[in-house]
Structure formats: C-alpha cells, structure tokens
Picture 1 (cartoon, helix red, strand yellow):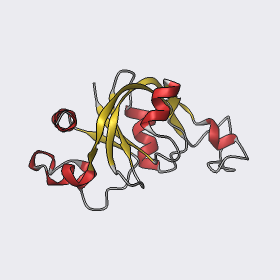
Picture 2 (picture 1 turned 90 degrees about the vertical axis):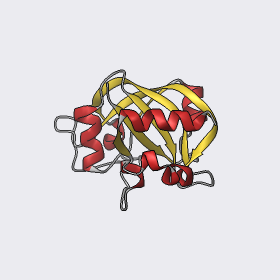
Picture 3 (picture 1 turned 45 degrees about the horizontal axis):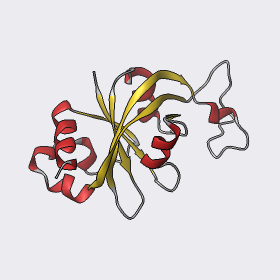
Picture 4 (picture 1 turned 180 degrees about the vertical axis):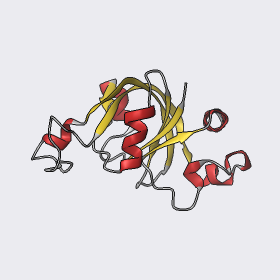
Length: 152
C-alpha cells in the first residue's frame, strides 16, 4: 500500500463534498508529474490525506482511499470544461485520474502551520520549498503522524 496527499480547493470540492458524494473521479489535474502518480502509481486501497488549499483553513481535512485505478480524465474531452484539452483525443488521452472514496473527516483541519512545525514531518514533500503538486506521495510514518495530529 502507498500513501498520498491530494490537494483540493474546498470552494471547488471539499471533504464535505466527498463525504456527500461517497466517491469522485479526481479530475482536472493538469501537471504531468501529478498525472503520472495517478496514472502509474495510485492503486486501489491506497490511502489519501485530503488537503484543503487556497482557503482560510489550509491543511489536512480528512482521509480518502483510492477506489478505482487510472482511467482517462473525461474533463479533457469536454469543450465546456475549464480542463478541456484540444490536443487530447479519446484514442490518445493525455490526462488520467483515479477515483477516490470518502473514509474519514477530521474533527478539525490539521493546519499546514502545525505540519511545518512538527519535526517528525520535516522531510514531508508538502513542506519542502516549491512543493506545489496537487497529488504527491507521503511516507507511511508521515501519514500516521498526520493522523495522530488530527486526534489532538
């Protein structure tokens, strides 16, 4: 099993939205490295830290799990979508996503500030300078530490 952090802007799609829908395709990722993680490495059963970004309470809001492995992101074919890609075709898609399902909402968001201050998380990709990927790997011990932080 692998562990991941997926970023979402809560005014677009929040942990509450995932809880309400149960599952969602993680569409709209337009960074090749993040796409490659979802296409090549995210496997059914992997656990995901659900991260709220670009909002008042930036941080980890809960846990999801990969429920379906890589498939073409349908938003790339939809001309009305902000994620439409005219260079992509159904025969040769450029963008892939996976499906995630709701697992748990934290009682309170684990703030990025506290994650950065935690010495056990000093090597976490999220806290590295220039870390902007919306899909990124997380080590098992980092995942467990964030879970522990959610309980305090």
